Length: 265
Image (cartoon, rainbow, N blue to C red; front, side, top):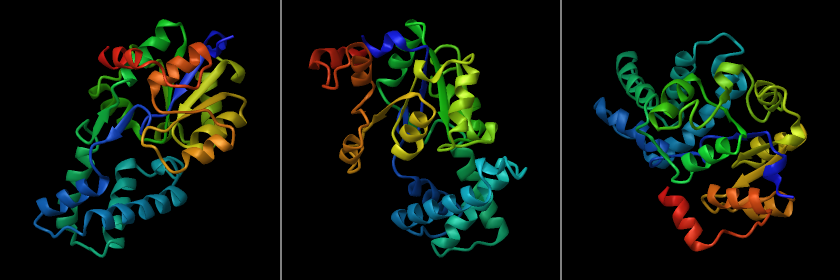
C-alpha cells in the first residue's frame, strides 16, 4: 500500500527544501558593507563568521530571542554586529546602523531567495489529495508574513498552517515543534504524518522520534547523503521523486518525461 493513502498530514521544511538562497549569504553582507563605503571582509570569511555568530546567538537566545523577550530585530542586529566583528571589522554606530538596515531589509524580501521549480506543484498536489500541508521552519515571522507569500508560496493555496520557531518559541530539533504541528493539524496521529526536510539532525531524527514518517531531500548532492542512507533514511533528490515515492513506494527516480512534465507545471 502506498504511503500516501495512510497520510493525513505532510509537514515540510523551508530553506533547502522549498526555497534556496540566491548566491552566498556572505555576498549580501559584503554588498551592504560596500554600500556604506566600507571594505568587504571577503565572502567566505564573512559566511564563516556569520555561521559562528548565528550559532552563538541561537544558543544564548533561542528562537530569535522569543524565549528571552528580545525583539527579533534586536536579535538580528546583535548577530550581524558579531558576524562582522568575528570577521575583523568593527564599525562606528552610524555606519553599522546603515549596514544593518540594508541587510535586515533585504532578508525581509524575496530578493535573496528562489523557489525550487517543483515546490509549488508538489504542495498543491498534496492538498488536492486532501492531505493537510504544514510548514515547520526555524525562522522568524518574516518568512510567514512576507517572504513565502512574496515567493508565491501562500497559506491557503500551497500550505495550510505553519509553525515558525520565532513565533512558536520552539525550534528544530526540539521534538515539541513537531508535536505542535500535529496538534495544529487537528490532533493528527504521528503515524499518519510525514515530514520532509534536508537535515538528518533537525528534520529526520526528531520527526521519527515523535513517531512520524520522514524523508530527506538531497538537492545539492551533499557528502552526508550516503551516511543518511546507511542510517536507514529514505533520501531523494527532489520533490518530483518524493511524489513518485509517496504514490509507488519506489525510491528510484521517476521517468525522464514524467520529471519534465512536473517541472513544466
